Amino acid sequence: MAEVDTIQREVLMKDYAEYTLATGDEAGQRLELQSNITRQMLGKVLPQQVISHLRSVAEKGQRPRICDIGTGPGHWLFDARAQLREEGINAVLDGYDVHPELFPPEEKRKAEDVSFGELNIHQREHFVPLMKSKYDFVHVRYLSVAVGPDQWDGAIESCLSILKPGGIFIWEEILLEKMELVDPEKWTNVLRMFKLNWSILRRNDVEPKLTSLFNSNLENVTQENFTTKDLNEEWQRHQALNMSMACKELVDKAIEIGEPAIKFVGLDSAEELQEVLRLAQQDFKNGALLHMPVNRWMGVMPAGTRGSRPDGKRKWTQALRRWFC
Image 1: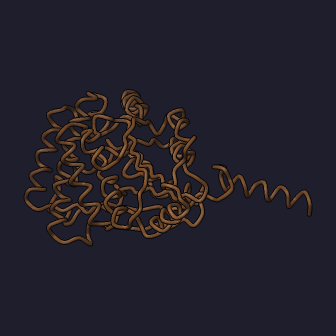
Image 2 (image 1 turned 135 degrees about the vertical axis):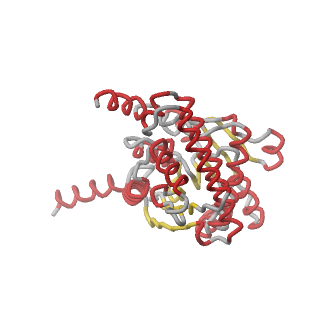
Image 3 (image 1 turned 90 degrees about the horizontal axis):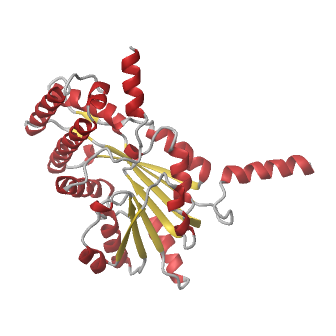
């Protein structure tokens, strides 16, 4: 029992900023597929409230500034650029990621007038240079696998440190714990693979954490729910392929970490883990569907607080009332 506890600590104490999936060419293909599926689910990447805010900034003679954290190959940024062109809004678009090897070629960056830079969401010093020219809109998508249980507050504070008062913050996240396997009695191999992946991904109660942090740091908070169940059969099949590809990346990463990770998910060898993957991928080929739920949290940075947290402001207000009343 002590040996198992030691293995679990070794795995759980790993740097959460380390990407759990792959960053090579195959990963690039999966990320593009995942982006296309998400676009089908969410529709336009910029909600109307964001468009209205950016337009109001532009009407003041300023060029709106937009930041995408965890941008990867920049699919969201390029979708945003296309939508902004339709709206006649000329914005600054910057994408940041801890893995610059995922960034698109320089020619595409120049053609779309989009900039990319390396940034670790857990390194507050990386955000300091960005505080000089803050952003009107900050966006994060699918980053929970890189945030540990005790890192949520710091991650949110880092993002908000570069958001202007009155600016909008959006975080979109897959709710892995709410994924729905259609006919689990039939697709037992996918079910087993999914349970192993859940361990590898180290779920951190995404929904309650982000809901609480948005409500305590921002105003006019909204939460929207999306799911691949609402897509047509073709896109649901695309989602099955996306999950099959992600499973392979997760297994490859666990094997790369070595015996501690394999033992942590309850298996005895890399060969056994690879066999579980093979059977799950066969299930996906034979028609298994695993629906992906996504939540979008959106909130506004309180005006006039200079980045201070609204709960702190409320505390000062309460203290003044007690003093004068």
